[in-house]
Length: 357
Image (cartoon, rainbow, N blue to C red; front, top):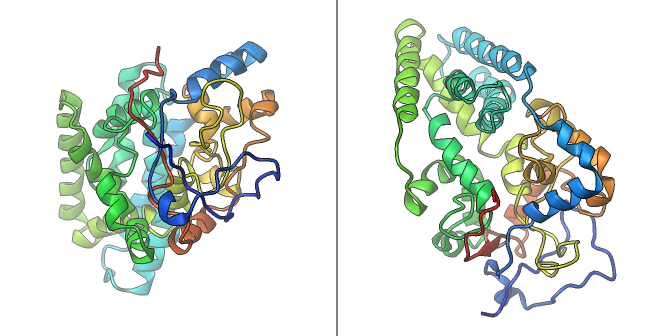
């Protein structure tokens, strides 16, 4: 198969080096995923980093502070929902609170659930699973139990078509290959991430799914009963805005969309494959458990948010030459407006190499 890749212009990322080996393709031919036959890059990177810097392994482990941050954010959302219980949802106070407080809070709990899915909140796995139900409460809809198994497959089978449900489908590529389509995707991308897995790869339901639904339903019922439907609407508005045209929602795009002309900087198999994971080191990380350190996270998925930046500090030669996203808001704007950037800017592979081995 002829390998294709996104041949895109520079946007929110720094320019490539002049000597970078880049395939200059006609734009019309570049609007397809880049198909590769190499394994996902993070398993080999992890081995190389540990060989050069074995001290990085000491960073693994959970972070007790996580639960306190989650409880504070949940309490803040409950406070806002209570204060807005008598306010019309179309009122500017309701909408601005949802955008400037609620969306940041719910993006925080989204990524708290991400931390908990890696068992980084508590020592015991079951405590992480149960506490994720609490983090899930302000979202309004149960999803923490479903998120974890799909996210684990994203790590194990990154880029594998039919396994990694973080990847856009071919239908999305065709239907959203224009400015309006991309704007629609960015506005409603939370729904794409929520419903795409059901169509791509259905995983079995467990008792955790049942209890997640039960706990969330009881919470929602109590909110409507004692505070009213407007408070419930506030939670849903917060979730929608957190996954829409919001600064923190840029992490969905910055993590794996290659909007540069950069190839993977490494020796050996896969050296000609475009980069497929990127990091963001900006100030918004403080609100979202350092989720911007995404290359580092895929290299070491069991290092908690308070120590993930240390990975880059201990092994700078593995990270300093990789372009990073400078702005989450900027990458949303670039993704929508740049005709050379789109759903196709993802690396896909056919074979399911298991990165956990």
